[in-house]
Image (cartoon, rainbow, N blue to C red):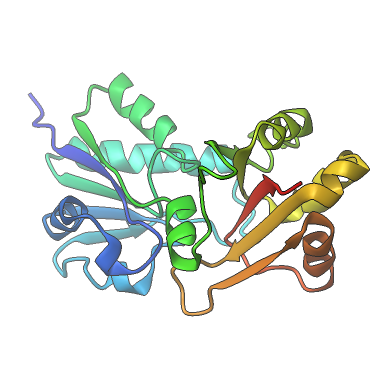
Length: 241
């Protein structure tokens, strides 16, 4: 009878190693095998133990690998090492369960009856908010928080109707992977919303070249069109009038 190991799906946070949880650090330190993504910082990679097998499974721009094939390959690698009785640590940027395919990996592990644990991390929306003082909620103007993706898995643009409902009801909308669709969102809105939606873009939070841009939606569309904002980036939207 095969001896199963255990899989830890670990959130590495926004980049700086001192923003890892104590448990995340412990999992990394005790790993036999580490599978890590492209956005894992040098700070965090420096904590990887010398005797662990390191497997890069991240996406590289223009590598031509189908996302479904890539994810299937990751699943197979995790299963292979777990079935060898190893401690497998899957290190993901931010939080594993927020726009990070954590749901797919946990579903796979459940299906295969492989023991696992999810270790949460600081997500990008938290990190960027703290780094640049961008309020997520504010009792004077925002009473809810909504996380959205610029496009869904089928590449369909987010629902502009949903976005309008959020901001009209004094919510804060945070868009992941949204800089490439910002102009499309702008074009789909009416004049009132174009003028009244205050927009903040945080680029590369947690890194040395992190930046914040703030203005009207129109100003941010213009800025991003002239000089595309470096990714990863988050977009925060709120009604200001």
